[in-house]
Image (tube, rainbow, N blue to C red):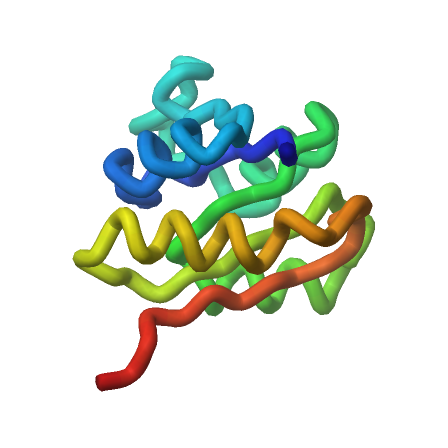
Length: 113
């Protein structure tokens, strides 16, 4: 499975479900950097330096960063979904068959009703 890094605003219940699916996830809280108002560029750089795909709900800013510099380990940008288990499964399904996420931006959206 993939090495992932979750941004500060990413829901922990989704992280817990992704871990159950076998993903290695490091959270910004676990690094001790939460609450430091880290710029998005620094968050993405940390993920890339550690070979981790960034998980974020901050789509607009990371879409822009991806366009400016696609040299990263991958970005999974999600919309909020209160179905945490379903969201984790959609993320898992979106990335599990991709061997190398480097430079890729994947969108995982909440299903429409």
